Each structure stands twice: as structure tokens, then as C-alpha cells.
Image 1 (cartoon, rainbow, N blue to C red):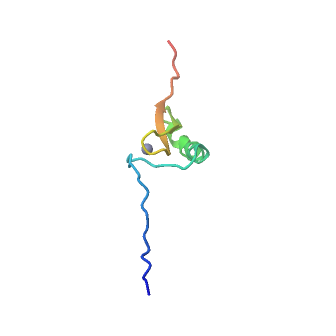
Image 2: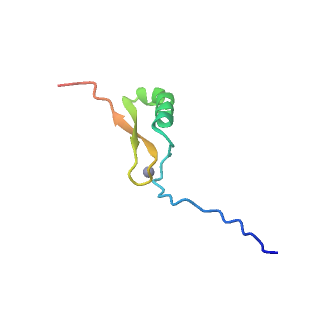
Image 3: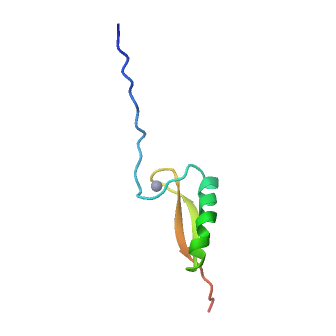
Length: 68
Ligand SMILES: [Zn+2]
């Protein structure tokens, strides 16, 4: 009997060292949740598509409150 080897193919993932989200919707949902914390620091979380891993990440952006 031939033994079938269970081969688990590991997807090539370039780790960006960041939390990765499958979709923009997912990333934005997290951004909204965590945005409460960052809002106190004048920071805003923005979702962006990562060219390295094809996933979505969140980046912190400084809120430009004061326009001179
Ligand atoms: Zn990435």
C-alpha cells in the first residue's frame, strides 16, 4: 500500500512584522476599534494594501489638526 504523505504547502509569506488582514473591510474594522486609543494621541489608523505580502496592514497617521 502506498502511503500518502500529507504535504502541507506553506504559502509564501513575506512577513512584514505587522498584523495582516485579509481584506480592507477587516482592516478597517480593526482600525475603527483601535482608533479610539489612537485618537487620544492625535493619530489615525489607515488601512493600506501591502505590495510585499498582498495583505492589508494598518498604518498610523498623524492627524493634521492645525493648519497654518
Ligand atoms: Zn505586508
